[in-house]
Length: 456
Image (cartoon, rainbow, N blue to C red; front, side, top):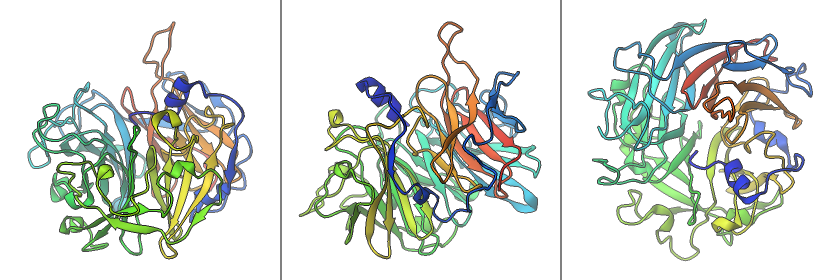
């Protein structure tokens, strides 16, 4: 989230026009429930101003503040850290929910993740994760540090064995910005007992500016996106673990990291027509996954090169395929063509890559404020998109038919009365039973639980 699509487009003067995309929007919801019959064009209705000035929701919905930046962690380990980002809700015993939350702290931050013995990777790293344990009524039972000493923990993804893979969106090495260890890794977090997972980098999964991951629940292959805004752009990876689906700690056993090559396509941005497919996708071993001397995206992948894409962000598994998103591409940054967002589908069994959604030059980037990069598949059969840009900030819903509606609006003004400013949303996710939507306000870090008349 170092640079958003809207911020880049605003700088280029490309904002405006009406919503326009091509492709089968239903592709975004592969493997989810059918569309809710009671969810119409206006979603759940207009947003009602919150008298507390925190979160506007449709009538009938309510929120509970679970955690606020600066408050004391219930564990007594220190204060709740800043920069609430990616998050997941994992089921626990007795109806409990473990909410694992990233903190995207860089070399400076308002409140760092407290260092805890046995859970700290690099004492000079300010990022990490905290975990909230909730009962069935969303009351906070515990809140503690689950990993510390990492850096720029942006997104990640859950595993089939109910852990969280948190991703560092940086390539800083030891000696840079005061760090004592190399950064740019994935770490596994056990929400029940974080000391079981510790603070061990999964080095075989590569060192680069990680964004998100998705695990193939049948084969155990882990897909990874690389968020690179400037050229050379990022790659789309897969990790073939030595112990696929082996449970907590199995990814430490190593494996092969490979990057995707689409023959004849060095830059995915040049593909403009939704429905375009490429058969025979190749996977090339990464020469040096630790990027000891050269960033992976600059390494020599031999004849045929490798396929790049600007701003690869969201990544999730649906049906029998993995979906990943390029948030935008601009020629001015070195891309081969402009686009306002792409959603790609890779079918492993057929080795086929397909552009399923293309947001065109007439796209209204205000609705939703981002193309679907920071997204959550919803139990109602649609999805939720966290807005990240300038002006008012929303969580938008998108129905299976393509209608966009406002689900929540951030009311926490971090500017002034004369020049108001609102921070982005992040980490939207749903409880295992689908009855609660959890979402973060990035600044000031606030975690909400939203309940109400969801249409399931």
